[in-house]
Image (cartoon, rainbow, N blue to C red):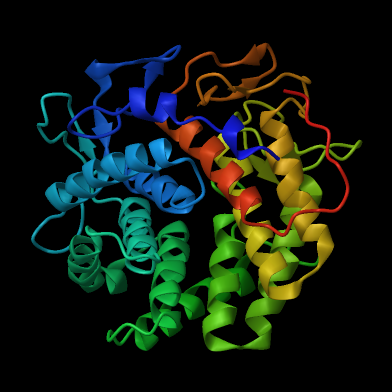
Amino acid sequence: MDRRSVRFDHLDNMTDDTGILEHALGTIPRRNEGYSTDDQARALWVCQEWSGQCSAEDQARLERLAETYMAFLLWAQREDGHFHNNFAYDRSKEPELPSDDCLGRCLWACAKVMTAAPRPGYAFAAESIFRKALQQVGALRYPRGWAYALAALAEVERHGFDIDLSTHIKQLADRLVQLYRQHSAPNWPWFEPEITYSNAILPWGMLWAYESLKRPEMLDIAVSSLDFLISISQSETGHIRPIGNDGWCGPNHRALWDQQPIDVMKLALAAAKAYELTEKPDYQAVVWKCRDWFYGHNDLGTPMMNTRLGSCCDGLSEDGPNRNCGAEAVISYLLTEAICHKLPQQQTQRTIHA
């Protein structure tokens, strides 16, 4: 795998002096649709994952972008520690209710900055934001927010920061365990009655809970749920087929379209964490399959990304790729590449249809 083939041009083009714009028409940013704090946190995560893994020129570019995204998080954080998520292009706040997902993603991005080595200059700001956001962790209501926050707290805890996170970690882990016990069944080992979006974040959070608390039940839940998700996220021939957003998935139904890059990235993320903890090669293979999805190993056999620009289509529908290339899609592609780069290299030569 040639690291020089990974480009950050589109990530850069989507970012102005405020932050990364949320949507695009083709590859042109749609300024009238503004910014989301969600995307700033995820873009900051991209910069941390690729730090030290790219050329000196790209490293300087990513450091500049990371400071922009960090400044956005600092600006978006409210006095009570939560974050305003949606902003218009003129930087005015759009009406909304607080988002658990946004809070969790911001905690995770700050945790990645705090634990980076070498520690970047903006890590002081990340730690300040992280500590301030902790006051909202106990009020999180939804499982994806729990999972993100759980991973962030466990990541900071294992690096020895002088922050007492044990109570929060146990509470969040217990909530996910209880959710799984409530909804799982012999033919449905899952946390919810329906599988919707960003699904693999739930077993991923449970894997972090196990790493922190060492409770065997948590590993059992994480592995059972992830194995189930993997089994229903592959085609008959073995390529990745994420749950479609036009109807989602329940015990008696499953949507094929539209497939979203974020679901492929989250599956790679969880499988890589499972491989880290279990060393089972099947999980490593899933991560590579997720990368392959972006290069054309998908239901339509069509590439989702442009290697020249480093852009990625927003989704895969029955009629083909969505040609718009917004922030979430390019972030998902770049994170999947980064996750693969950090895996032990396989001995066999891989063929990618680019």
